Length: 133
Image (spheres, one colour):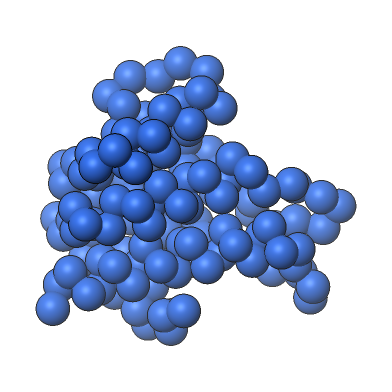
């Protein structure tokens, strides 16, 4: 998992026009899929709902349209897994999602599902940082 500095670097880079490398689309698919499969449970991280909404914004950038939230997320995951790259012009939207992840307030003992969401967000940030090198 990257450090907080790596997450910050990825967010700043995406806000200024950097892109998620095309070969890292699967990592973004993992993140969006984690958002669709995690059980909220009785003790989610504070800020989870706004973060989920930001994941929907990312999905709709991939699709270029909007419909049912869950279907949009599933279609975006499928498109990424089929090799569609995340559009560079939408990098600020991805930065906003990573920023929401950075702002989550974690409970003392998060569930395995939420840990998977966190790890997927860090993997996307690490891919952006690697793409800058």
